[in-house]
Length: 273
Ligand code: ADE
Image (cartoon, rainbow, N blue to C red; front, side):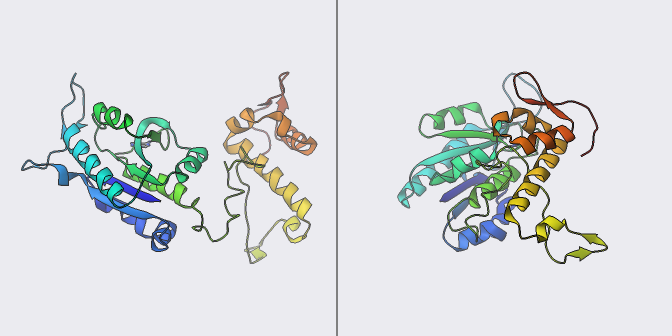
């Protein structure tokens, strides 16, 4: 996969050299190119922003540097043999970045990121490139960052670990919270490793039992427990047809009950977690 990032803070992307993403680059699974947007400015002050039409606070990133930068980055990528680019525009006004979107992006051969500072990029830039390539405007959460660079790191890490040959164990992301499949819509429960006792704290006996069925059951119960506590909205959205008898029992103990339509709602506030 090829990644291009156009930014006014290239050094902000230095973490792409370490850990999993760094290894993916070293192994040739990721071909990362960081570009300084100011290289496409032609005035003495390397201006990339200007005041917003219609007034209001903050500054807006100008069309020309972004247009020239993206034209060149796309042309260079094509020349280097890349194909199928998609534009990824981090913005708090974008669609929520989810595991499903990470999977979709991981299937594309070439992502071009446009992290913006200030109040964002002049809309015409996004509209212009949307006529040529798929554009994903993504938000990594309901909060406002000072710029999109941290979002690029987040999206890149979520996408890179899905690329074949990047995670050591191909099964590792099968049980991820939010992964499509059996545990879909539940958060992962707690995990433990050696030693079996630490500061007087033991690990749950079932994990030492060697009984795969019981371990799977325990993990599912714990997943319900954690999801009910931290993300009740995920339980409410679950298709009740995916709950077995034991799931229903666990939910009932946690204070949930089915409504006439079958979906589960929290019956009592503040019961056992
Ligand atoms: N830029 C500023 N805030 C952001 C957010 N929450 N997600 C993506 N990009 C952003």
